[in-house]
Structures are given as C-alpha cells and as structure tokens.
Image (cartoon, rainbow, N blue to C red; front, side):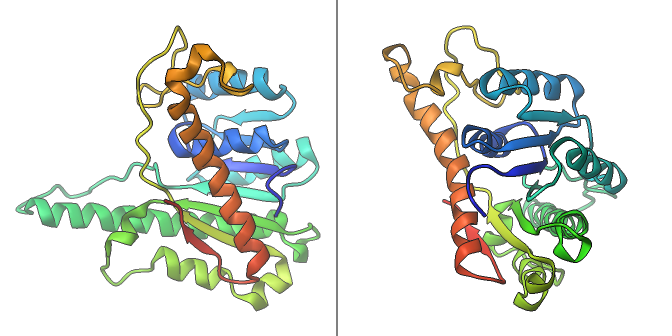
Length: 265
C-alpha cells in the first residue's frame, strides 16, 4: 500500500485523529469518500477539504458507519465515483458505547472495567464488519485488485482489558493469515489510536467543525508563515499523527503478508 494516490473509503467520524488521517490522505494525492452521521458537520468538512484539495477529490456520505446495509451502499457509490476502492479505513476508536441496564451497585473501578470491555467489543465488531465489506468490494476473489484495511482502534486493550471475549489483536491475526491474504489480496492493519492532546488555543476567526477539535487553517497546508508561529505545534502534531498512521500501515503491509498490527505513540 502506498501512502499516496489511494482511492479510500473512511468509515468513522469527522473529528480528532480520524480527521487527521483523512487530511494526510488528501494531502498526498488520494481520493477520499468519508462518512458523517451529522449532515451539517459532514457537509462543512467536505466543503473545507474540497477548497484545499479539489472538490473532485473528497466526498461526504451522510451515513452511520455501523450500519452494514448503508456501508454497502457507500462502497457501491465509491466504486461508481472512483472506479475502485483500494484502501478502507475503519475508525471505531471514537465511537460512543451505551451501558445498558444501569450501573446498579457497581463501584467506579467495576464501572470503568465494564465500559472498557464495551469499547473493546465495539472495536472487534467494527473490525469484523469492515473486513467483510473490504473483502467483498476489494478482494481479488471477487474480481477486484485487493488493497488494505486500516483499522483505528481504541487503546483500551493496551491497558490489559480482558473478560474472555475476542480481542483486537486476535481478530487482526485471524483476518491477516497469510493463506487468506494470498487468496483475496486484502491486508489487514490495525493501529491503536494514540492519546494526543491537541492544543485548543483558538486563532483568528476559523471556527472548528467540532468544539473539541482545534480548527485547521488553510495556511498550514502551505508552510508555516510568521503569523502562525505560535500554532506550529498544533498543526504539526495533527499532520504528524495522521501521516504516521498511514506510514505505519504502509511499512507493515510491505514487511508482512499476514498479521499487521501496531501501536502508534
């Protein structure tokens, strides 16, 4: 998988780390169709990115990435627009989870453990769901050219969350077996989302798509002028983490035919 020139479907949210990965893809010449469950935010992000990289390079789908029929329609739309898809990014790290049945008599530690298990289960389900979609619409066995599935999972598994269910690591291993990849040509890469604290100091009059996400100013994409010296750290950290996610996926896809997983820090 090359870092540049990909035709990509990004299933996730238009904020935070996933947003930085989309930005890195577009900056390096890829064409992207991304999901947004919030119509207003999605259209605003498409307009912003279209002005920076060209309106034909980026498309937003008002779709819940956890809805399988809707995602299947999105893949068909992407193939219709771009001709093929050779990279899918599935970002479950920012998904909200629902704690059903209330908290009862759980103490804080027990509650944290239960929530972490729900987050981990959501990551695993998301990887499986996206793998099914990627194999169907990217796999060589279905007449396509293969490609890469890059999962962005939450880092809770790194904290030793257990419970007896499937893990992100185990699921990635199962999907990335060399004999399977040799048949369908879709390599599976998983990256644990890093904990990045983007500085939130506002600059000029550039509203953020998400209040929790600092704004990106077009000037950042053409070098750092003296006007933006104080905000170089914010712009650099965003671009760096997005690029490194793609770089890690590239290196792993080149080095190993099967299991591909890395923690980005």
